[in-house]
Amino acid sequence: MAAMFGKKSNLIGLALSAICLFLVFRKIDLALLTQALASLDYRALIAAVCVFMTTFLVRTVRWRALLAPTKPLAYRRLFGVVMIGYMANNVLPARLGEFVRAYVLSRKEGVRKSTTLATIFIERIFDGLSLLFILGALLVAHETGWISSEHDFPTSIKLAGLIAGAGFVGAFGFVAALEFVPSFPGLLAKLIHRFAPPRVASKLESILSAFVEGVGCLRSWKTLVFVFGTSLAVWSIEGTTYALVGQAFHLDLPLRAFFIAMVIVNLGTLIPSAPGFVGTFQVFCWISLGMFGISKEVAVSYGLVLNVMEYLPVTLLGIVFLAMENLTLKTMVQSDAEPEGDVQGNGSPAPIGTSESKPSAFSPLSP
Image (tube, rainbow, N blue to C red; front, side):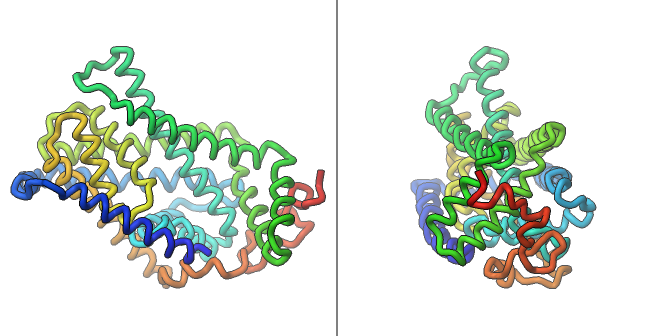
């Protein structure tokens, strides 16, 4: 299923990336773009790479907290899995790196793939909420005069933030309902059995059971605060990375400009694109920096360099960890045809009646 979805999404992503690249390079002065690239301060760029890579250490700490209710794991064992997942996101369409990360953790630690995907889903929700928190804080500071700026927030950015916010809040409400509304998982199970063939329904119910196990981290408010705090740390570090790349381009902009650019670019990359966010990344760099009077040529060159800077070290390090696991991406992308393993990793679903399956919550006959 994941591979089939990836093929369809890849076609859409390639088309949208092609359109974005056309818009980016249409009527652009290549001489000015080359000049901007030639003026790079490589010391600031190297510093940006080093700062950016620390975000993956923080992501690993956050992911360990989310997985702790299921299985406590060592940081050093999780870091390689994180890097493999992000590398796969860089080279595969449709964010299939999330499935790759789930596969590797299942193979390495015996955690059920659907349980892992639930924790990754929660990660993405907190990433979105943190980005929107940063955007909202900057907007409030601007509107109340706490920070002065000669550039106003475009209405389109405010609208996009509201739409994205509604989506992330809705997603958080969904996973919260799975954990805190006892009848909700049972309702989903009934819908599965009503509309899916029996063999498919059994598989989907097993996946649902494992997914709900993964959202068990929501039971602890301390974990929620910690995950939100580490998410803010991730994006604060990444915002600093954007500023350092701006310094490499000798851009005379306030720090908030780079944080706004970071939010817009990362929300923009939710749109389907070619692997590595080619095209969409550059378009949203152009849009966000253009708000602050930066020329198209400089903004596009900034986007090209930042995109490559975030792509290469992550991809190369992920390939190293992948080789250490003796795995290939092709094997992992096709792995969703395999049975869902239980928490002991024996390759079979947790039987009905065990603590892992939570039968009272998932039986379609439960009230």
